[in-house]
Image 1 (spheres, helix red, strand yellow):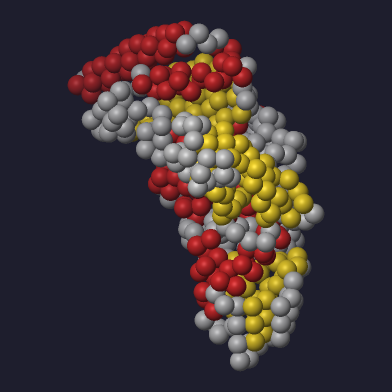
Image 2 (tube, one colour; image 1 turned 135 degrees about the vertical axis):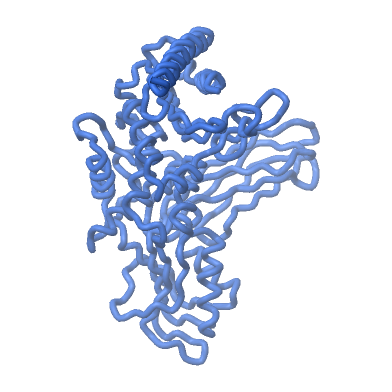
Length: 473
């Protein structure tokens, strides 16, 4: 009888909490002047629904799609999975000389950046290599030659979020453009392309001004044969801090090859031949290897900064593990759908056309995404890695500047407000936020907030979502 009384008390308290919460959340929506028809909102507590507005309605998820991709990747790969980048040679190095070709074989590593390139070249240097008589081959045959997934938005742009995909990729297939004021008023600004190589040509049309508070810098990338040209223009004040602009490149295989050539030069290794895109000779042997980051670190790169490039690289790697043929994106998507099959989804109930969310063709409901978040939460093997990869409100990633308290303390302070770890999503007129809200001495709430509407109201959606979360103490 005592236990029954306790159960009835808890049930009564839970019901009261749910009613009060619904009232509070709907008041927030009304205060921000949102029509509920544009929203898909869902909150659950230990599998029990506590708030629902259109939660079963299929909506464009934008980068909330990466929740699906991350869950499938964690479920499909062992935690110690590595994507190695290798250098091979089909001749023996004698007296510091390689008479044949050197070959870079891409392993589909999304984390292959400058530090990894240095690691690879330094390992190569320890073979005493100083001269390559032949060519430098770039082998990207782990993936097919579709650089831009057909499931993305159809219009290509030069911004870093729309970078091409190749098994041989470097620095997220993007370049950093650093800009500082010139030496005097009227002088061009100082511009650096990082990393530097013969792949990129720079056209500097900038000007430095003595007037304070001016920074109207722009950069664009245009194709120049099989290379790219970066055009920088605009004005910067002499007292302005350094600015940085990120641009994608268009030819990843040549990009990584010419970058490797530059790194070889810096380590005293001369390449006499040319950089070419070709498969490594069948009799070539591995002479240097650079392993990728750990899988959880790669997923963190994808989730914390909503990196489309990493998401699509991982999807093609899912395909590559299932076939000896070059990996196709559609086969990677099939592997993700198999994961959704395994947790009870029906394929007719959702639409997955692009694994990063860079499309308006994907369709998931808030409740479906919450179901995936709950499935991951109940999987101890994967949940710690998944949760640690999510942006933390007020701390890092795409939530670094959101949900801070008025005195500047981060919302993550355990005695202040809730600990929020969540994935963001954004396209024009599409805004999403979904993840976990920690509670002291209690299990986390799972929430998914989605907005599909007009562009102008979309700009105000983030503030409304943040206000909703403030009610969940």
